[in-house]
Amino acid sequence: MTTEPPERADIVIIGGGVMGASTAYHLARRGAGSVLLLERNSHFGQEATGRCAGGVRYQFATEVNVRLSIASLPMLERLRQDTGTDCNYRKCGYLFVLTKPEEVAVFRHNVAMQRGLGVQVEWLEGEEVRRRLPLMHFPDALAGTFHALDGLADPNSVVMGYLQRARQLGARTLTDAEVVAIECQAGRVQAVRTRAGRIACAHVVNAAGPWLAAIGAMAGVQIPVTPIRRQMVTTTPLPELPLDFPFVIDFAQSLYFHREGEGLLTGMSNPDQAPGLDQNIDEVWELTALEHAAARMPLLERAGRLSGWAGLYEVTPDSHPIFGLTPVEGFWVVGGFSGHGFMHGPISGKLMAEFILDGAASSVDVSTLDLARFTEGRLIHEYNVV
Ligand SMILES: Cc1cc2nc3c(=O)[nH]c(=O)nc-3n(C[C@H](O)[C@H](O)[C@H](O)COP(=O)(O)OP(=O)(O)OC[C@H]3O[C@@H](n4cnc5c(N)ncnc54)[C@H](O)[C@@H]3O)c2cc1C
Image (cartoon, rainbow, N blue to C red):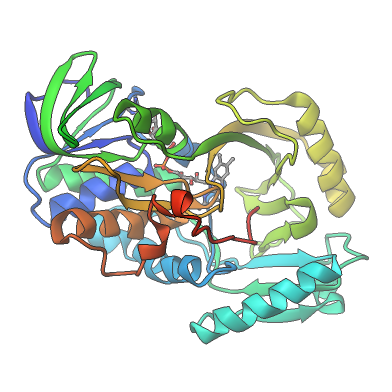
């Protein structure tokens, strides 16, 4: 939907991925005044959100991430009720395969923490991992973890569901609306500028995902988010693949597999990937990743390549997101999920509405995930990054 931007809005959201869409919906639902979402592309949800693997999980290494999942994943289940759109949440479970003794020790500790929060993760011995994955080759599996409520959902439906409902509730959402400047005066946001004109506003939410730092710089705020390319491929149908095949992660190699249609989706994070905004497929890495994938799943030798694409992770120094106010009054930030933001999109928008309308987030305590932690040395490390 392309129209001219208005001259003013109470709250302007920059970015039409899952964070922006969820924030727009939650603000509109609470009657937050005039809410305007600006997306640079000609369609919403085409960047990190639209290129993601669609995985949703409760299995994280820090309490705050598990709590975000506990709040967010049921919101995916309620999406149809809340917005009229279903996101096809399939609970196939995530199975982390552990092949290194040091991983086993950390995961044992994490499973105890997860269970303490009510997340019933199963601990699997190596033999049980092999029994559950007969199509895979894991002679070196020492142990594994499985959680049946983890799974997959459709990112596009989540974005579209939130945006459609936000519009019904009075929000405006514009495509082809690139923000090129943010005006601030006396430490306060005054307006944003697009190529089509100036929009005076009291609040700006920076939800620009991998471009979070670039938007921050427009307001003179340093946001330590680095874009890093990640890529994956899907295969032609593999009839041997059972319908309930889980989301499998070979943790040491950051190599993952899940059912996609009648075939498989597989990806592997390149540990040497240089930061940057390049979203072209690295064909050399694709071959490397496929060789590693076929070694774990020999069946892949018989599959064809159906499609492949690359996208950008939005990575922070501690692999945790950033929520809340910046040093500029009225300039808010939500992002930097470091590879797992799709699943936390629903609760993140709700938290942003709480920040802006109530002065503090109440649904989940994210006070440790403020922007100031980077300058104040309060980083929190997340081990379960894929
Ligand atoms: C390959 C890959 C696999 C992934 N797998 C998973 C997974 O399985 N599970 C999971 O939970 N997460 C996964 N993620 C991470 C997840 O995709 C992201 O964390 C999440 O989508 C971030 O959402 P966002 O709204 O912050 O960013 P985006 O979706 O990138 O949205 C930001 C938007 O801001 C817009 N924008 C930027 N600059 C401007 C500007 N100047 N003016 C206007 N608009 C602007 C962009 O065009 C973009 O649409 C994966 C990511 C990748 C790349």
